[in-house]
Amino acid sequence: MYHTRREQNVRIDVADALRGIAVAGIILYHAVEHFDVFTEEPITYTLPCDQMVGNVLAWLLSGKMYGIFAMLFGLSFFIMNDNQQQKGCSFSGRFAWRMCLLFMFGLVNVAFYDGDILMLYAAYGLLLIPVSYLPSGIVWCIIGLLAIQPIELFCLLTDTPLDHTRLFDIYNQTIAFHEHGTFWENAVNNLRYGFELNLRYNVFSGRLTQLLCLFILGMQLGRQRLFYNEGRNLQTWHCILALSVIIVIAFSFVDFGILKPWLTPIYNLFILLMIVAAVVSAWYACKSVRNVLHHLCFFGRMSLTNYLLQSIIGCFIFYGYGLACYRHVGITYAVLIGLGMVICQYLFCRYWFSNHQRGPMESLWRKMTWINR
Image (tube, rainbow, N blue to C red):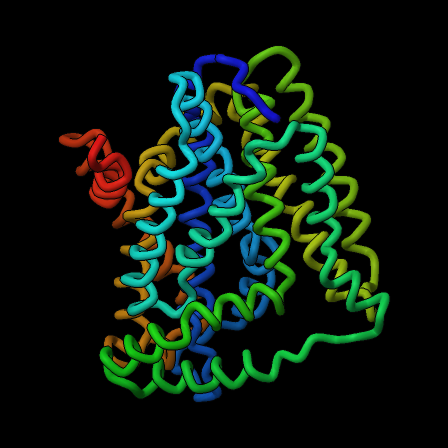
């Protein structure tokens, strides 16, 4: 059984910066996807570079930003759990209640945006509780097993493809509401099918086991204190960066063929590790980079608030019940809208932190977590 090493867990600024990058990237890619409105209607304003911009951002952001978010979720769990262990307290029950609160936040969010991940994160998060009691050797074995995409590998070896008909049926119905439905029609449909839709999409995209892998990996990196600039940690991140770059380059020249459902999530995982390693390495090795990335710490410290805001704002901009920009702007213009959302939300973060220690939803989540304490 794992026991705390009783080392002080101070706030990790580079984790806040990574969290800010993840949320900003999520907003940008949601804008690329018109917040899940994949229409066949002609779009009014397009540019010749739209396809290239979409491909580049898909390679860089799709799946990776949610993955970074998941990794940092596991890191936060470790810090809170370890702090309570150092006080001689159990955090398991309190964390389970915290996940119930996150699920309720997800219910609010999914009423606006069908792609909500908070409810799934709440469900995945509960699995961290039993894993947190295991010794590190066993935890690394679990991470390795989940990282090889066991579901996709089993389907490949047994030649038993998964049936995704139900996923596409729900998507088609949901997109129709996004295009032509009222806000209330969208909300009712999303509340009814949102959780199932996202769970099925996680299975379809290979994220089901990968996100759980990243949750546990974040917890384990917290145990190893790898996000602190201690000992040989920086050299370790340099090695992770070099290895990830080599694997990403090698995979880029491979035709996956029938192995695509299995290898694509693994390829995306190494892109994610490359991004994380590059940011952490640059943060600790270069003061000028650290000064620039420090601005994203404000964004990351309000990640829950910003995630909820992007759903409300983005869906109003792109859905039929709002400005219906899904039929007006192509990918490049949509990215500019997403960038505008990031800038506006960043300015709100700066304003808010001038008078408050935590974001509004973060404060509520914290107060509700420690209620009756």
